[in-house]
Length: 187
Length: 187
DNA sequence: AACGATATATATCGGTCCGCTATATCAATG
DNA sequence: CATTGATATAGCGGACCGATATATATCGTT
Image (cartoon, rainbow over all chains, first blue to last red; front, side, top):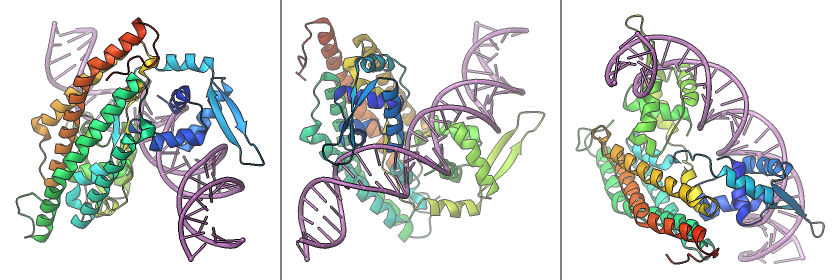
């Protein structure tokens, strides 16, 4: 599942510029399960255009900045359907926050507390994004994934709010109390 | 958060070979939030050894295959604590399964059903892994992350089992019945 | 009206990481 | 006693990330 297929998929829903594709991958519901950077998007769009799978239309009304709007072609739709039959790879999750919490014993407790606050705030942001009006799905597949996203982030936020105080207390106890040899093992 | 820091972190818990580090990133609880391949692990270990942050001990009792066991040094622990103070990046999730479900309208319904079965089975595997004996956390941070992993995958599995039948029905209806766009609006 | 901050928009570059492959030994299975 | 699967190291090419450069538009503030 490369960036070209990703772009083609998004363009099959709606024509867009490279910038707008990137925005969907940061703000939109697709950000739940995939991402890409400009460094991958622009070369992918150039390649797709060269292969005739997408068409370009340059918008430059006045002396304005170029805006290249890409639109999927019939050949593009055919190629997309074929691409989507490939075997999907396993889910890949990369969370530096969870990584740091896992090794919290090596980090000052005050710093861990700060990270917990930010992580919880981030989860509230994502839930707000998923609840926004412009995020309403319009078919069965999108509805399924959107609902799963809501369920996941709701469950995560519930867990974080319920268990963050306990983690803070444990770390403070280890740091403030007698040197190690407490209820929780120090590393 | 590069692979070198990842290796150093795991070695701070337990000495291991490159192969064993990789195994932890596939089977172990760390697989919940990070991963790495041999193509990244071996060069990282070589670099860490060259910098003196880890020490190598070659096990080759008889004429057996070399097994290089890496152990973190005091300098390595210092460097690790410093590395863990860096700003964490946002979580990155890449799920080709959810991607395909999102664009399920472009895929044969039978194929989507097959993917749903595999995705659900995969979630059961992860839950079994997290419930295994050799996965029991031994400090507050690990307990926190382990509990979050259990909560997340439980919530995901619950949603999948509850809503997969509805998705199957919607896709079958669209394919078999009249070509109604949005006809399956009912949740 | 000027200013600064933010959003829109395209593009490139270096370095990191992934996926695949090759190689080799050992244990277990039939 | 062959074949599979687990253990184990290593390298390559290509894909991808993160940062940066450049330029205009918009919007709120002073």
